[in-house]
Structures are given as structure tokens and as C-alpha cells.
Image 1 (tube, rainbow, N blue to C red):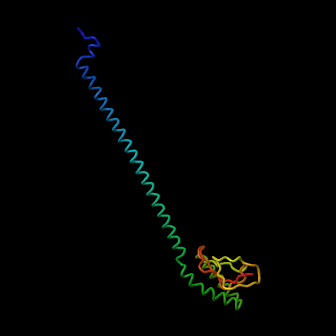
Image 2: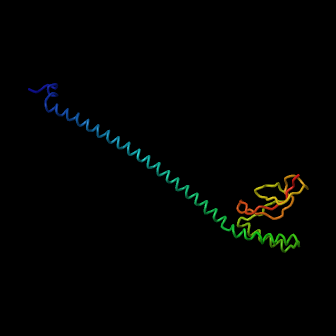
Image 3: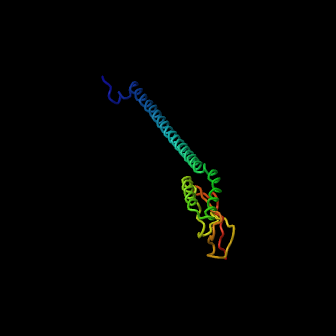
Length: 175
């Protein structure tokens, strides 16, 4: 006689198979949960490493930009001492032009200023402009003219790459 389905389900082999399935199911669940946890930890680690990489990359890029700016400024101002040494020569030419109004001297000065301007040297416009303490140094005062304006330029000033190399020495109108 054959066992009924309910009797068959209670046989020791069947009971053991059921228990084995349950154990396997629990083991698989634990393995799945463990894999999920490890996967989550790996994603966190990847995220942290990516953030650290991006921060380091940004730091390196900023460092490179700073160094590039420093090199550029060094290049721009490398000739500062040489150009500063030329200023007395320009002053002498200007004084000779004032004394003699020689067109040859004017051409020489203009040529020299043209060459020096390629290296960033530019004369400061003073006469007739409003007094600017960053560009002008007062060496005298007059009452003749509009208050706060530069009346005369005693010595020409120059800028080098947008920085003041030497201020203009000026006489300012003060009432």
C-alpha cells in the first residue's frame, strides 16, 4: 500500500529534505545579505576614493595654475631692473629735448620708448590729468589752474606691466 500524500510529506526523508531546504535557504539568505553588505561597502569605498581623487586632482590643478601665474609674472618682471636702469637715460634724453627741441632726439626717444613698450614699459600721463597718488608724487604746489589737477610734470613716471615702476614727479594745483 502506498502512503497518502500527507503521510508521504511526513516521512523522515521528506522531513529531512524540507529541513535541508530551510537551512539552505537561510545560508543563501546570509550569503546574499553578506554580498549586499560587501557590495555596499565597496560602493562607499569607491565613492570615498573618487572624492579623494577629485580633491587631489583639483589641488594639483590649482598648484599648476599658481605656478603658471608665478612663471608668467617672473617673465613679465624679469626685465624690471634693466628697464629701471634705463630710466635715467630716458630722463637725460627728455632733458636734452627740453633744452634744444631737437627732432632727432625726439625720434630717438620715441624709438626707444617703442622698444621698451614691447617689454611692458609705458610712460604715465601726468600733465593736465587729475592728481593720482598711486601714479604721481607731489614735488611742488601752484595756485594757477584747476584744483587737484597736475599742472607740470617735473620727471616722467613709468608703469611696467600695469604696475608702477616709478611715479611721476609733479607740481599740483592747490587752492
